[in-house]
Length: 96
Image (cartoon, rainbow, N blue to C red; front, top):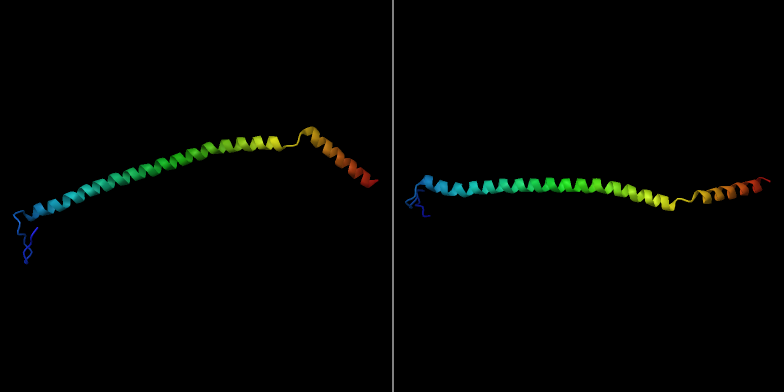
């Protein structure tokens, strides 16, 4: 576009038409930004939901694993009774 030193356009297009040519791409950029921000928001929201559901699903698995480990590591009742009896016998011998 050529401009004269006094600021008037040398092209046959009117100033309004030039403004429209500049504003039109800016409007489309705004629409693209809104669409992009909407998609970003939806992506963030869906990621948050996925993380929440993953966490909620992991908690019962963790409790189930902890329960299984506790049962595996717990001494058998008979063995526990034998240990208590041995401790009581040791205490009695010390008292005598």
